[in-house]
Figure 1: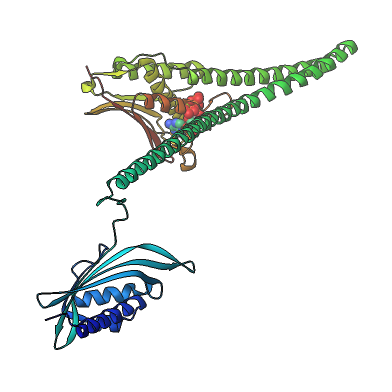
Figure 2 (figure 1 turned 45 degrees about the vertical axis):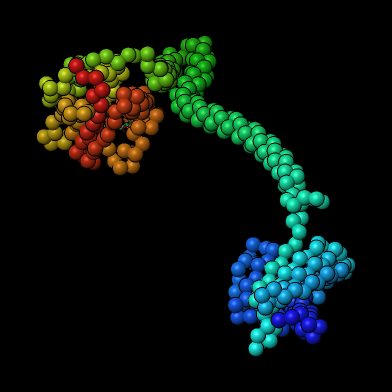
Length: 440
Ligand SMILES: Nc1ncnc2c1ncn2[C@@H]1O[C@H](COP(=O)(O)OP(=O)(O)OP(=O)(O)O)[C@@H](O)[C@H]1O
Ligand SMILES: [Mg+2]
């Protein structure tokens, strides 16, 4: 095959028609010039080794990006025939329409191979490339530009790192502020509960104090009345007034003692136990406090009497506790139990035998101390409150309501538990569980 004038113009017509379709998004014409075995290598990552179908699909999808917006100027088109195939090399300046202006983009290089067959002239291969935009004049590869870009990138990363570090510092400062605020909140929460406690105590003391104040004011009035009667020499009136004054004085004394008991109880309660844990014979301790409680009550009330039952587990050995504190817990439980049976006894129930039992048991990991009574038990409404400080159902002067709350704190500080079981009208049982940390 020779490159005759006719062939040349035939090829150029095909070539120009094809280009026209390419630059104007005419998919049908574009596709009609491609051979079944068409191959294309383009300048972007996607445009590699595509077959005819893929190439046309790709063109169809991207044609709008070029259609009417691209122009090739200053073209140098060269035709050659090699081995019965027509080679076309095409160099051109590409211009693109942007913002209503044509601007130079880059040099385009197009290589096409056309085969002449019965079907006519068809492209069997095309390659398109644009010069490496990173390469400078006289360079084949844009090392310098790439290196500069890398430096710019590194600088950008540095700036970003500094930004991030600043942000981190800001966050840290915010964190610290939050921590400080939190600590302040905890502190004010503590202050609030301290305030509540103080208010509770004040309320407790206010009550007996009011009685003391009122009765002493009343007595002052009665005393001036008494002075008047002395002047009048009215002995009968004098006697009546002194009786009133005496009765008031007794009330003052009673409520003064109540306030005293509250303060003493509080002091005991707030006392930070300086006690040291030591191996303690729990059975002996329980026995000792049982006697203490009994005789204490007998000293106050000669008529008081109750049956005491003990059941001590001899295998309990010595348990590591603070003896004074544990003793106080046992004492309080026993005192409560005696009080309960004594109350029931006052109801004069037929055949009632007031009984208080104390027992211990080695339960392996834990030891159990049980204090039970056959008093009237505790109602459900009351049982929920018995461990609260100052909760008492006893009349003024007989209880401050600190016994069980103190006991709870002590047992807790020993890592133990205190539980109650009760049946209304039948009695109550308090169970202390203590962990056996050191057992001798
Ligand atoms: N064994 C019991 N039987 C019936 N009620 C009980 C028994 N033990 C405690 N309670 C109830 O629990 C309340 C609180 O007991 P707690 O020992 O804390 O205070 P208190 O005995 O009233 O006063 P304090 O012990 O400070 O002198 C008692 O007032 C009583 O109502
Ligand atoms: Mg008590």
